[in-house]
Amino acid sequence: MSVEQQLTAGVAALGLALPHGGVAKLLAYLALLDKWNRVYNLTAVRDAERMVSHHLLDSLAAVPYVQGGAPHLVRLLDVGSGGGLPGIPLAIARPELQVTLIDSIAKKTAFLLQAKAELGLGNLNVVTGRVEDWRPAEGFDVITSRAFSDLKEFVALTRHLLKPAGRWLAMKGLYPHEEIAGLPSDVKVSADHALCVPGLEASRHLIVLEPVE
Image 1 (cartoon, rainbow, N blue to C red):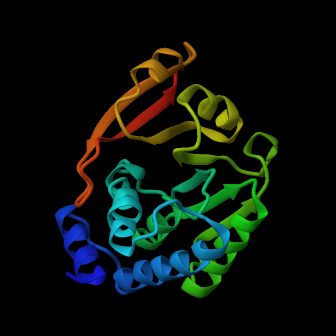
Image 2 (image 1 turned 90 degrees about the vertical axis):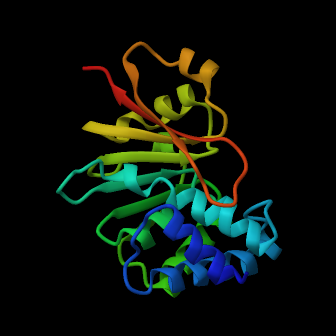
Image 3 (image 1 turned 60 degrees about the vertical axis):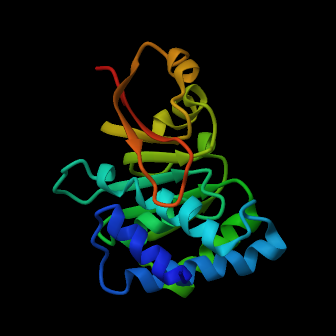
């Protein structure tokens, strides 16, 4: 099975409908990630087939939970984005999202800017800096992360960036019982989605967090 066939089958298994040219853009992103990874070490995964399952499909598994039925334009922040995961696959899969990627390491954001330009992602914004120090003019509806930090730190570092009715979406492996127990009393787990990622035999969970009013 080719990488394209693997991706197409995986997208179908997730029940997603991608916009026209979506698969081609995801493959172009994968090729760019592979190219830059040889110099910049953006990801420990080197094999293209594993990149499809561990990166693209793993990120795309979060698509159904990003908008949560909201009819308005959703502003999403991907914290500690690294090589652009899950932010870039989300931006490709849902062009109506306004996606911002933030990372403190300049060589990583240089790659993200290159990906934005080469893939023509007009709904993507890239920020270099520490998330706790960043003060944009407008907050975000959704703040997500994938292997950025534990939940307590994730919430603490980004709380000032969340809109009043916003949500955190934390992508995790095994269900993080201890991390959830360590959350502050004014943050609650509003949902836990066990993700079934095609080609990935590991446990994956999407933890939805909300401020307690």
